[in-house]
Image (cartoon, rainbow, N blue to C red; front, side, top):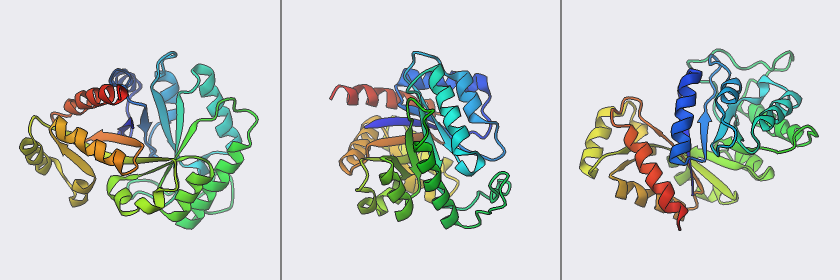
Length: 268
């Protein structure tokens, strides 16, 4: 099982991204996901500034493909490869949901009169975009593709391009049969770690803002966390994308626990 880290800050400064990259490299995370927000600074540029040639940590860049052409995306991928090969993953925000309420309108395809008004339009656009991207002669090392969503169409797209399906853990649990067709299944979880399960549950109740958050949070002491991760792996999960509650004052305990888990898991 591979463990990835998620940074959900809208505008992480480059110096902070470098610091976070050092932490993620030390812990042993497979990658760090840099999420997409229409009002954020460009994460391709930030990742290129933060990458340390020779390290192993990959940068998973979230992308809404209707913002650029497949040709230019291929150029960006190969530019990244030229800095340090095999360090890039692309997370296609595959269109299973509409825009976030805190973002500007994202319905226009740049310099194109066509509109992508519906979820169906967006999902089809992603599939066509990846098809064109895969035909590029520019790319010497194709990155891993991660497709966010749990609709049958999105999962089928992931299967077509040997990609990784990504969903929240509660959505995965409800759609296991659908994801079974994929070789790699990634689930996103929030994590909260304390010395005891009782302390963790008490802390969880103090940091949760929305009821559903409990459904995609794993919490407890390190032993309990490791057991829950092992159960996920038994249920077919190959990759786990972890992040913590921003208002958790003991959030560093997540990195500490994941470092131990990765070391133990690597020895199996």
